[in-house]
Image (cartoon, rainbow, N blue to C red; front, side, top):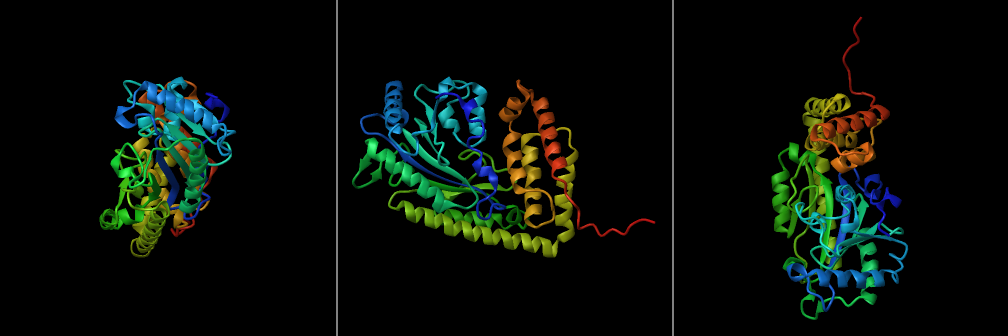
Length: 369
């Protein structure tokens, strides 16, 4: 199947805000890098290698319970806008889509399960990237989903494995378990209290790293950080997941303390920042993508601090995705210029905020006679 239109809502489960600590942790992702014996991988892979890997995966996926009822989308066959939509939903990487000036390579594909929130990218940096993306802090659940699918595929496909080093991967930092676990966090309190530098330094000392919204090479905007493990060699998958969970819970605790401190010591300034951001979004006629992300940051904190009753984290999560350029063009049914995108983005945000009315319970200004 190469028809994304048949599954238009796929990949949006992580927006639901139904996982633990969803006001701070937007989503959890766990992925495994795997390669197949007998085929060159990484920069040495040629078209015949990629096409052979895709054929083997297609045959094997039909025998995997998790993928049997899924959808396999070959990237070169997809319209350019659909490829961008998949990227904006964080279902595929730019590496899978290929350089913008060249387009995707033959043999690249993504397979979505219709049963579980798991998918497989075929012929990205490695032959296979098995991944799960779920809402909130759910590292153990995401790992279990990926582990089960990996075992199903491992029974069907000859993984490249070395007795001393573990699973062999294109990038040396992934050799071993091949696992990369990450949590997408909103750390606005630590940024505003200027404690974020100390927190990020502690991450690097623990062998973790941070990135922006779309992973490696992307910019950190609006106090949103992706926290993940950096190396895998010599560590079991369970240890890596447990370590990240422990560090994430410590970050959550620090962020909650920072937010409480702001409310306690600078309540007026904190409320003002939140309400100004709400007012700008509620009435703006033009909004760039970067500007929107920056304004959503104080709103998320406002919801967490119960200063914006009537507004949900789910709605803010949807804004982050459905106001991206390809989603706006899909809704408009045509290509949009940069200024048109800014206008459509502002219009979408106004409609959402008009639907979810916010009652200002903090206004203690005396009524005028």
